[in-house]
View 1 (cartoon, helix red, strand yellow):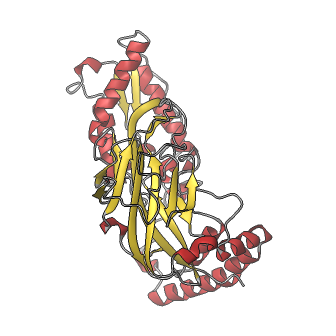
View 2 (cartoon, helix red, strand yellow):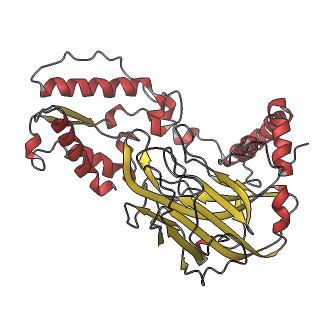
View 3 (cartoon, helix red, strand yellow):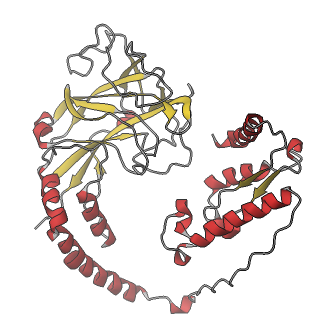
Length: 414
């Protein structure tokens, strides 16, 4: 949690000093610098904690041995950078160089030395467009109309016709189950969606389908399985023995009340046994791990189910179930999602490096569309708490889970 960041940072410094038996080991901390001096409030709290670690009034024991480097001056905007990725400082090499240089100079000062100034070329002046030079509303409209035609008649048409994409586009549109299913819900169709969105059309965006699952009273049960795995490393998903009487927990005929299940609202989750968000800075609507869980996910294995009313599926739409709470690198565990007791989709792993930032879950493929004809259906999902990090090893247990069905109108592929 952000409010504990400063304490944990101090613990890290103390632990490293203890590990290397160097009580006065000099330490330099570079602050977060996203946005420079226009930093968003959610990052300012982290920045303040990183600056406070070298405050001798708050940490007198660090006087002369710990320094903070404010990196906000080194931020470069998108128009000065190779890419628009704020979380990577827009991939700006000058930013990386300046931060590294500032860290080195701060360390030299802690050691009682002095470094030569770094020769820097003057920064180019940014062009400020005067208000009088702005396009009129008429010209803006004409420009948008011209771009729309270019995108729809050129980029979209080329994308659909591209042999690299065309076969997969047709497969995704048909709802055919692929030979190799993927836990992530961004395929080739996602690129086509972005083309239409760039043209100002949101007709093919994913939209919520059916009831608001945040208001559904879900039946749930959590337990520690007898199939024990070491918590220090590895994925947790595995075949487990369900408690007696719960062998058909995902079937419509299962009586959850009789089996002693509880009821609760989603999201289900915990962080070290507490009902707190996993990542307060997450803004992804398909993840929601920045939200406080409504119901405690107490033990390793979580079973969740509900019977809900759904309208019939539309022929010119496709459907997916989004499993929220684990869209970031090194988050989440495997899961299995069922519809009327039939497996819709599953993953045996969480989110690995370079896989973050995507919705997870499963599609409702053509082989199971007939399960939803309008009326009651039973949805069920199981997942596992996460206990480790691939680099840091054992960590406090954590998990976050929510579900929502979404539909997408299919664009023309002709």
